[in-house]
Image 1 (spheres, rainbow, N blue to C red):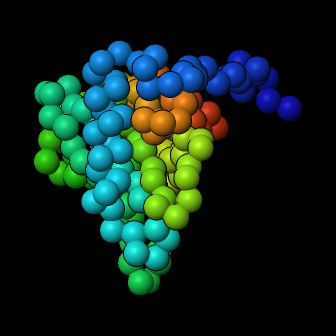
Image 2: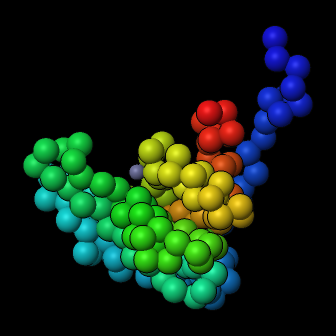
Length: 164
Ligand SMILES: [Zn+2]
C-alpha cells in the first residue's frame, strides 16, 4: 500500500460555469473563437468538428482543428494540431490557456466535450517543458463551461518524464 501523500485523497479542482456569460470577456472571446474554428475542421468521416485555440504568453493565438484521414489513426485531434503548431512556431513562448469547442452538424451537443487522453498527455509534456500550467476552458458558447487551472488536473495519475 502506497503511503505517499501524493496519492492520498486526490481531488480534482475545477470550475463549472452554467454559461459563457459567467466568464471574463477575454475567456468568452477564446471560446467563441474556438467555436468558429470548428467550421474549418476536416472531419468527413465522423462529422465531429473540433476547434481549439491556444493563447501564448506573447499574445499569439494558435488555431487547431481536427484533421481526419481515411486511414483513421493517421488523423489528429484539434488540440494536438494547435499544440504541435505552437511548439514548432513559438517554442519559447509558454502557452497560457487552451480553449476547446466541438460541433456536430448532425447532433446537437448539450455538454462540453473533453480532450482525449492522448491530447491531455501532450498538454502535460508542454506543462513540463514550459514549467508552468496550461489553463483549460472546455465548452461551447451554448453549453456550460469547465475551467481547469492546469491540464494536469485532468490526468492526476499521469506518466511523467521524471519517471524515465
Ligand atoms: Zn485528442
